[in-house]
Amino acid sequence: MSFTPVKKLKIAEQVATIIRDAILGGTYEPGDPLPSERNLAEQFEVNRSSIREALHRLEAWGLVEVRQGGATRVREFLATAGLQLLPYLLAPGGDLDPKMVFDMLEMRAMMLRWTGYHAALRSTPETVAALGETLEALEAATEAPEVQRLDFDFYEQMVSMTDNRVLAMVSSAVRRVYLENGDLFLDLFDPVRFDTARHREAWEAVRTRDPERAATAMEAHARAGMGGIS
Image (tube, rainbow, N blue to C red; front, side):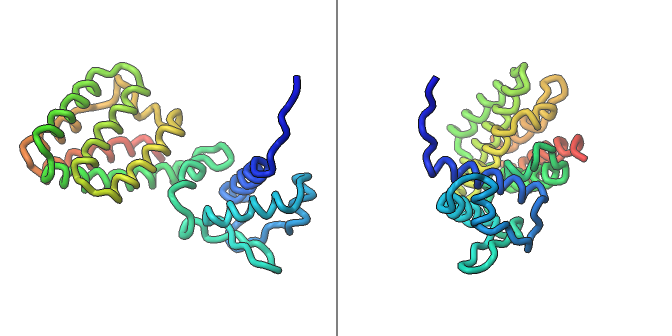
């Protein structure tokens, strides 16, 4: 068996991933310096250009501040990092962080309320009909992964109704977190326990253009899912 040469860029990605996980896992706290480039190169047994590339990736993620001639220090990444780090914050070091999961679900509840309200105001007969088809599929689903996917399809169709492009981008990021870490959330989508009554309530509210009713139903659905997180 033969192996293809490892590209420098691939090495940098691997190094950046390892350091990223160490930072998010608490090995390095905000304000702590990372080892020097030379030290890191020796530890990883790679050249210093790969280390520099890895550090620039970490800097782009908002995790560190690279200073020429000085130590590279860990930043207050909860204030500087983007949503791309959320999947890794959910289970740093492989252990689920219940507080981070709860925080994400709480944010989703606020988003769902706003979404329900404005979807009811801006829906059309065509979008209401499409949402109804998704609802019927969700009510008929028998497997947790299918319920999970259809639940998000239902929500994202409502997001589309609001015609808010920024909300669509945030929703897409949250969906990616859910689907890339699907196993962490499957218990919330057990078909035996998953209640679609609030989805139907929201659909009826959107159909009749009742924004407050739609908002209340969608927020209640989201907060019901927070009960199992502690």
